[in-house]
Length: 297
Image (tube, rainbow, N blue to C red):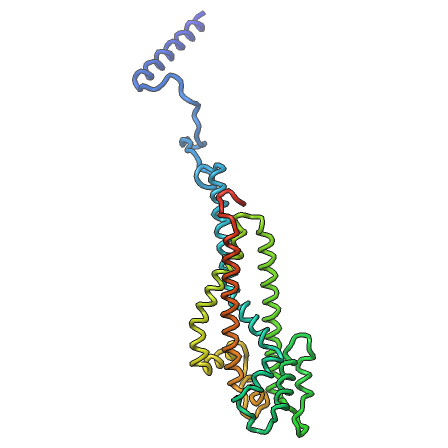
């Protein structure tokens, strides 16, 4: 019996003590279960790693930002590619028989000081053009070419340079086709995405306007400082000294500097017309694109 009495007494004391603490501190009678770490520190509400709260709205906003950044990068890449694409198109137009014939038959075009007739000059110049065309026999055409006296038409330095030109032209043409294929594939793939369908036309507009800006700087250089531009071009794209020739070398007799001056001017005009046309088409394309919505994928 003493055990039971003692227990009851202790319970009453605990109850009284608890009521006293409650009245003294003003705390509620019932407290939530303690939640903390093993060291006794109180638990702190944790933020979701994804940002504020980790709700669907914040995840969607983060995804939208990433998509916008990716789209801007793609627009920039397309814009940077456009000038090169248009320049290579101009090369495709001019690297034809008609331009060689037109230049060499042009009134006022300097005659060969070492005795080529116009017919001989045109024939050898066309042979040089054939040697750099993809799918042709290549440099073998130049190796077989002969002057009217039967001697070799092109020396070893000229052959090496034309081999370099052929490689450079082939890479440029292939790179252009690959870039055009990628842009076309992107345009088709993004045609059903409201967010991405404007990427290609935006890149084309920016690239075309950038090309026009480049022409504003380049045309005066072509007209007034062609010698320096021609020199820098060869230093950038060709290694060694294979592109330096004597005035008696066949390549300089076939394609004198005035030939390349006319080519550069005509190429600038072709690039200008292309840039205007691409910008107009891309602007009309953009007008048909629906506005970007935040929830579009």
